[in-house]
Image (tube, rainbow, N blue to C red; front, top):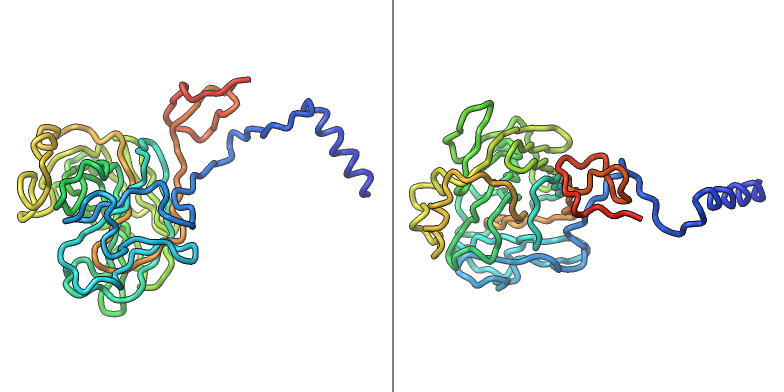
Length: 299
């Protein structure tokens, strides 16, 4: 039997032309691990009141292959809303995280930030935020926990500086609830967003699609009456953003949010849905939705 296996292997290699190269499998999904489980390489940090990449009080770090958003070095929360931005923008993609909340909310954190974080989609880059800016222009897939007393849906949408349509109509609410089940504190949860440029976006919690919306664009109120395009620390480029109101959000950055409640991520990964769609190319993928044939590779 062992001799038969070796013989089969010999003929398989011969039929392949003895090529040592990796064979492309068009249907095989090639997920990019945005979090390498070692450090924060490839990410930018922006915490309100602090310069770009000032990791104030070690708010973000990696330990035992877990990405931690931690407040053990803080005495009190004083508006230091933070975000961790991946270095590269995307347009058509799936992003998936596995996370859980742990510990207690830091004293001084706002009530709404209890068991609250988020994944920012189509975000402005970290380098463009004002020094005191608390939230980026983006679409926030909320990560929300519940306990025995307070139950909240998960995978909601909040819209800092953005607007969306649902079922063909413009939505004016800043936050939109999903149809998800409740996820308890300390529970590992898988949250995924399927983002198709400026056409449609899906939020998925533990494999259930819980929210769908369309036509994301710049515009609307920024967050609330205290934080607008021109006040609340938005930054020196507020005028340029005001001039962009109504512009479609076709692409942007992915960011993980820190709002005063500690949490952990054990996975952050992305499947790019934009790439070579020429079936004769070596790197064609059947799951691509948007073509970028400039990336095609041939023999």
